[in-house]
Image (spheres, rainbow, N blue to C red):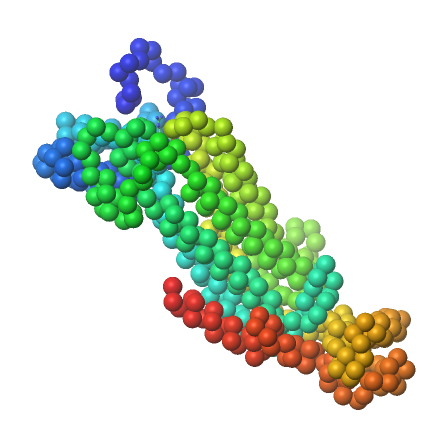
Length: 458
Ligand code: ARG
């Protein structure tokens, strides 16, 4: 049955139906769709637009459809165009005449806008909880690795020593900002479009504020044309998801590097790695690679929707139906990545000794050696040159700075004394850095306490 068959004389062509329909993918909105209809009809009854009795019959019918769908007793049959038509047709089949009054003062245009907003709101809640799980796991690892020294890199070249806690803390910051973005989007989208009709509102005395409050919105939207054609909240959500995916992808890349034979900073749990069908020695970081790889389709969703929207005149255009599959895919993908990544992080063993040894080998204490000279009155530019000479000597001999004898240090500058070894030890290099945001334990403990509180608060 077609909702709009009245003015048509020809049967719809099957190809056209298949091209036009959205039920095959928007069926996942049935909870939101029915919830919206219950709120709408509750308002219609309160306003006397439908009778109390019809209102009750419709609500019971809708609840029955919901229960049957939840229980798998009702199938999404292909003849219906979309979830809205499906629910309405089913209602009429169940409750008869009263069911035909549900769509009073409503259009599928404001209905679909509502469904997608409700869906985004629900999903934002779930994604936020998953990011929070990841943050919790990160914080646990940070607490364990406050004195696990490792090289910090710039240009993927060893730069200065940091700790694993500090390195992980950078990701804590990124994922915290991701949560902030999700919260902002939720707050901004939280206006109810229902009652906007097809585009120009309706002539019925709807109480839009009441419907909005039933659905836990902050109030109704204020322009009916914008209400039915706004997809900004989806674009913002996709941008936030793209950013989460980008963060996960960077983190995955680090795991992949850390898992190489050359680094061996991490031992991935067997459950999160796979072997090779031909090379018996292999333990591949497939999960991290897939998380990195899936970032592409999340970016794709954002670019696709921006492109769909860029030429659309007001108000609703059918192009907008294209917002669904790509958004659903991006949401599912990011949720999956978050779950898998958190599991991988929780089960990874960090190789403390390999990290420390690597930090020692890369002259990550060269800046501190120069700073040592500065503290003894040598101008920084000269100190930089002197330590550069020492590094060159070390490279020629295949040793690290702290393996040079005091005589060798003093050949370059007499300002070096026996306490230089203490001053350039890995521990000192890190532990002297205690300003806000730095890797020294004293600073990290303060930051970790702030993060703990932050996580417990929300
Ligand atoms: N399936 C449509 C969509 O997803 C619902 C709105 C249809 N409205 C219309 N006038 N054809 O956008």
